[in-house]
Image 1: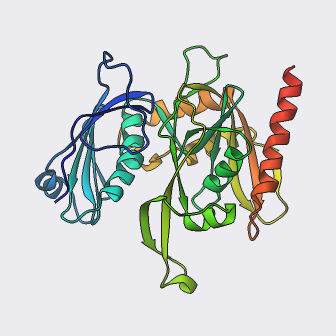
Image 2: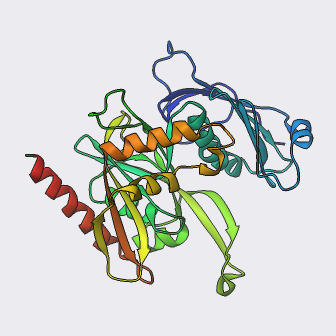
Image 3: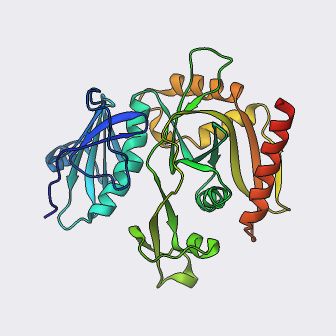
Length: 323
């Protein structure tokens, strides 16, 4: 049976979180006088899940609740943007439970609070944040780690919490998440990072026929420089595989909306949660006030140094134009 932790208080995703489940690496909330925004607790959701779900359901939306089950892990209920209940399965590993808590659950909770969760990583330089989004396997985390090695600060991994100011001429704001990055073993190898001492957060069977017997492992990598304060979002880079050479080109017109819609975490829940109008209004506002670039990489060749160079040159040009 999983040990029951109590009494942890953190500041993450722009929220004060009180939780019975520890978030390794998270910064304890220093302002104890601040009221709690989110409660995370253990509970028993098995009867409710059996009552409201069918075998085909990945998620169930009930008024202000979203429930989902991860096999051999837990049933989760995210409620009204203020509460998360975790119902662990017998023998479930705590690291795996936590993986979906600070990923899936927090993305749903942000949607419930009308905060846009982009699916990607965020880094910062000179007081400005930059988002890196892209489809699974595009190389977002590898590029993020390579940029961190070039002196950027870390803001978030997997989920980028974005808030639009009330005035149209202000940049959107990104809230920092948790001060650790999750990287697959092959990304660590490519970047020359040792796995020794790193915490394993996820393991799964490889999908490809050539690697049928291989287990893919994801590790939690602590970050040296973490931006604890919210920052203006100065740019969004969409990393995508292309047949031709590595390139960096502007994302124009309606393609900007498509990009933001595609890379919204849990976009399949937008309609059942009744958030279609809010979501369109939010991504339209974000598209109108943010530089967006397509960072194309060769499909069969991944060169983090070449991509880093393109990003650095782009930011240097923008900095020179602004001066």
